[in-house]
Image (cartoon, rainbow over all chains, first blue to last red; front, side, top):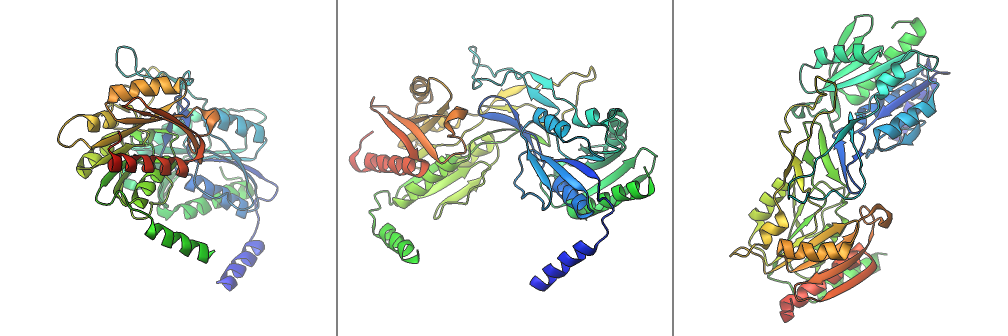
Length: 237
Length: 237
């Protein structure tokens, strides 16, 4: 009802804004990597989790820049959205948005792009399939985790895995150099990619780990935003 | 206005239905070919042209089965829609829909799929990009064009090219064995993929060719449906 909506709005206005004065940079969605003028490599990320994180950080008072790949979602209210298509464009947009206090890398960035995506791919003269030569994409999480004057104070990665989720995520956190990592199982049976719910493990540099099981993606986002806020208020890493 | 809408409805009811008693099978949209559980190869086809052809054939009285890859379009009214994801699924669905009098292959079917799309693709131990081994997909247009008791009487292919459109399309018609081919230029500058307009060349087995320039995709569909109807009424191939 309108009364409920107004009550929610007044509650939001009255809620504490512990992240006022902080700039949060969030990535969301898939990237599309062109193979040729008509074909591309995509992934099943819907952007729901990343967009929810951006909205939750804005609700706590942060100024939020959301760099998003192609998604079918509305822009979250009060968030500055930068639309990109490829991993290279996403890195460029993230760099342009620095400095930031918080970086949450929730996008499912393609690890590889296709070399020489020029004219339409044709069968080879011999009739066989063409060779697709892949090149490594820039690693946005590792790049923004690198120590230096522009490193955000708190860098949170996401790890989307289909097996041995926690083990792979712990290794990924160390390899990337981020402070926290949010690990989730995206194997098709879970319905995580494209769905509205998520089960995650939060793994921190201080060795603490938490399991947040079977929550709405908006609730995962609220808990993550609260934990981020707690870090800035209490210095907990 | 409601009056216009009703007038349109009554006009549609009163319009001649030259394709009553005919079954038309139409494919539309892209196919998605999985690389692994989270990644896939897609293309920029929106399905607008194929869906418009299905609607136009239904408006002329045909019973229409529309086999569509993943699109963001509503199902056309009065059309039986079968949703598929991959080229293999599309061929299976087309075969299941036979017999048909008319086959219009408007989908942008992936020529290749990825072998062994099992666990999530990982970097190789050496750190380099993985090899993507492509395998040829079934050729739906060529398969349904093959002479035999289940070959639809009139088979119409589409050719999406980015250069030398007409020359490639003539060769494609001969190679596939279809009766007509509708050739269009999908190079990015034209805005055809995803857009609402199209410029096509219609190339027929009898050697006649027509250029339909810069039309709404719905108008291309109406002209094609009228030409198909003309074939069945006048025996013009």
